[in-house]
Image 1 (cartoon, rainbow, N blue to C red):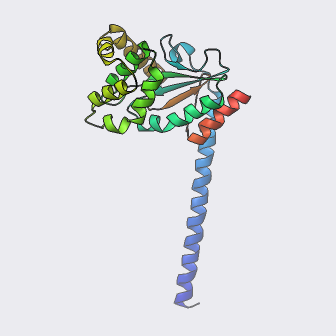
Image 2 (cartoon, one colour):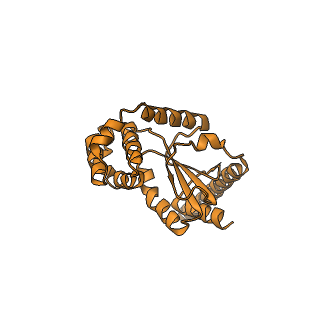
Image 3 (cartoon, rainbow, N blue to C red):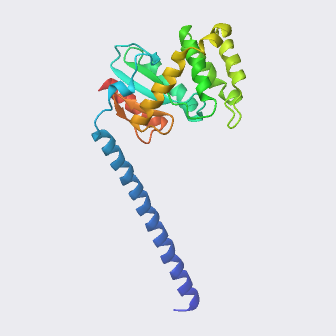
Length: 221
């Protein structure tokens, strides 16, 4: 066998080994994902008191068959990305799905955004203001330099009485909501947004497709 054939043979063996290694890694990752999903399914439901507080904003009927709890940050880009899907699911299952919103104010300025949302809730405008803040998030949720005056303007454009809202933001109950949600986040080990709990069970490795499938399965199950 000449030198050229030796080189070609070695290259072929190298490619085969690389392909075999890639397949092995892919299978290993798939197995790890399946194992994590199995652990999540086997895990006991979270304490409902930690998941849902009496003050927690709720979208959908209180007696819905399925409850999805979302720990979200108004400044979170991923939360903004998931929001249209959640609206789609509510439109698809208007009587069977409720979404409970919990605050995870991880980003700079998010605590003020929560105050805006809570002030909006006092005016029965939580959802319109939430939609407006998320839609306009790139304008105000500037990482490292949040523009909260723009966030207030966005809330005003959604119908909020800003004078009343600015007065309500100083209410001690606002700090109570932020503190309680922060305590529940710590107790549950929530460290990223969005984090979802479906009927008490935490969803892992969530994608748009998996979340939609999980909700459909719970409603239709």
